[in-house]
Image 1 (cartoon, rainbow, N blue to C red):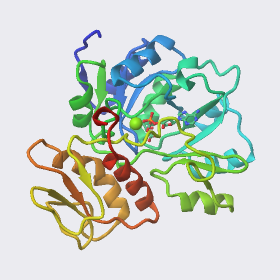
Image 2 (image 1 turned 120 degrees about the horizontal axis):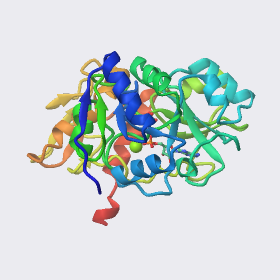
Image 3 (image 1 turned 90 degrees about the vertical axis):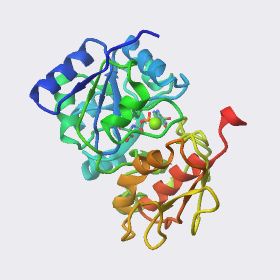
Image 4 (image 1 turned 90 degrees about the horizontal axis):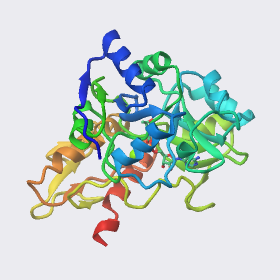
Length: 319
Ligand code: TXA
Ligand code: MG
């Protein structure tokens, strides 16, 4: 693979222009969104998109999310039914991805959808992401900016750790506010939850007035990226722990103390924002397995538990 001198770009007008130029020239730029850092490429440029798969070491069957600056731009690449309009109206810009029929004239590289007839789209809320999308003037395909199978990055330093030398630039916007990837929904009818994430499923159900069908329960795995072991720190993980076992490092929550605590006050929003960063810190190669305190299964807690269960699952490479 070709090697690049990965540039760190400041979150100012100059950095933004440089980032947009790289994208327009078919290069790769990691940029902050409110959920996690994305690894961006011009979604119409097949070679640029192929480089995203190569940089991540990602299986080619796993399609990418297309990021656009506005609902109007999204309507240009995907078909919006009444439910999709309703969800976009309520939650965009924000941590919600909609899987919709792709328009024939979308102009997207077929590599983005990995040959599916649907496309995953979202309008991110982060001001830098929005400014970059506007400045670049193209739909931007962006998976999380981490090597395939590793934790998603929530700071520019995380991105550098995983992808330095493989991409042209990182736009540094500081830590991500939400800290969990977007919630992915196929609006239907019937509406289906394909991946729990930064927007609680309860909020979506309240908006639509009907319960979401859960992938894997009613319909099998539908987001192809939902491999069981996905968010994988190097150390093993033990869940629902009330304290550390011998040699273990403890990740606390609420009253269950630990070397690091996701949220001493038991706040799930704060816990989500800290999750990937704290897992990385405890996965520094100096200790044994990571024991994690129980997290309540409601609101963002469901998405946190989803990520933790995947991180704890046996790895294909270790099986
Ligand atoms: O918050 C996020 O969603 C971040 C930021 C950068 O926007 N992006 C992200 O992308 O998490 P990624 O590639 O790591 O995860 C995208 C997920 C994968 O599980 C993929 O299989 C699913 O979206 N996906 C993409 N297109 C799809 C489609 N047409 N149908 C079903 N699932 C799809
Ligand atoms: Mg990812």
